Length: 441
Image (cartoon, rainbow, N blue to C red; front, top):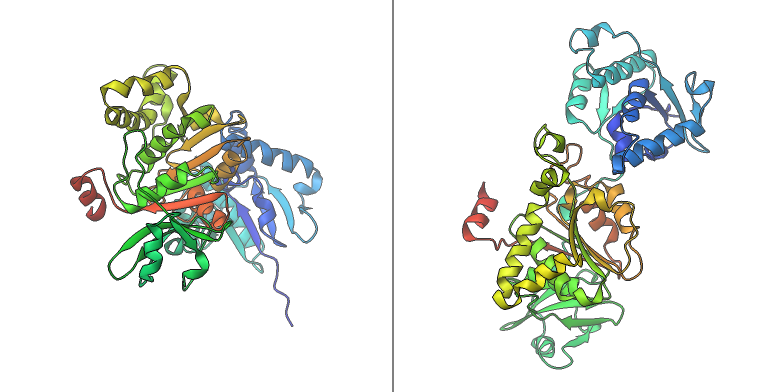
């Protein structure tokens, strides 16, 4: 019986900035950190964003393993794990120098990976990077490369939607949905797959149908009614489900996904305002991800002027609700903003705070990493409810995709928890034109 040799993984900077604990995810295999990576991490140590946290945390980890062997043969990461070592910069190999400029840090990392593969030709060597272009460059020179997939969702097409349709339901059960107490035992409903806590259903009989939700704690199928909230009335079944989850006090974590125009953010805000008396404050936030190669520093004006373009979509939803309220009640929303009962801020301003008795809405959550999602949820204090909204197929973050973003990860991991509900909205309600464009363009 032959024993397979340990593999060697050369890590890029973006892998560490994505997950500072990544060195614990490679089992018994060895890890190499190019010195260029440490130099790049040094630029991220100051600040309060997730990237800064990962840079500092990894620096502490490396420091705890410090010693001469870190640069000479490597040191053990732990029991049952491989070794980690740091490789100093080397003169570019001819194959690398002939094709890539030495002015880019990425090419120094590529050079180290290439030379390690030449040095250990009897072992499999992989460059691990979340940069697709660097992976292509590596493969072009014969170096194996792969994405960091420890927190990937395996099959995005099978991701939990939070809803299902049950056909050929006994008409008597549907009648019970419209008769007090508007519920029946879930044992009476025969389904092919087991129901998930807080899963929403469309029950269809021969002539009638009903919207329902599964309450696993009471073992009941309960009717879901269309409830207006702060002037906003759900326009379809999925919006009705989303609002029900938001208004359900026993559900403390909600995720709403769907393409632009499906009403995710509007429904979340309307539900929060309807429940405003139950919370000390309503917080709305979104991550700042520049859509071009120029970051926020290039925008004119003071810090508030720079942030306004990123926060504008949230204020737009607030304006819709104000108009839906009518002139008589419009000042109610304005008063909440003036009294700081409703606050809209960049997500980076909120990190590090402990949120107690707060209704917290995070928009564009698909641009968050799994670690960032975890960090936000673990900030939830007593009485806090968190709602994540986003489109997992519309990602602006350069190193995230539909499989690796935090919102997809949340849905896959939280499915089945009693405190959690998820709804995927599919029908656009912004306008017929917007829905058409979203579907075919």
